[in-house]
Length: 73
Image (cartoon, rainbow, N blue to C red; front, top):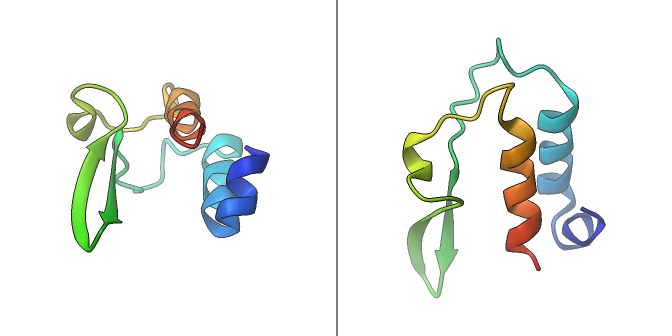
């Protein structure tokens, strides 16, 4: 995650917060998909197949954070 920290410190802190805190009562509305801008186009990228339909929960949040680690390598 240190590579991610050097690329985007604020995003890195957000992922650490998710990892270190109980998110079961928070209304974060997170899924296994990200929206990003590529060459002026906004696109949604699923972190795993069907990710836009999978909510991030306390049980699967470490997998969610792990997928972001894989995206930067």
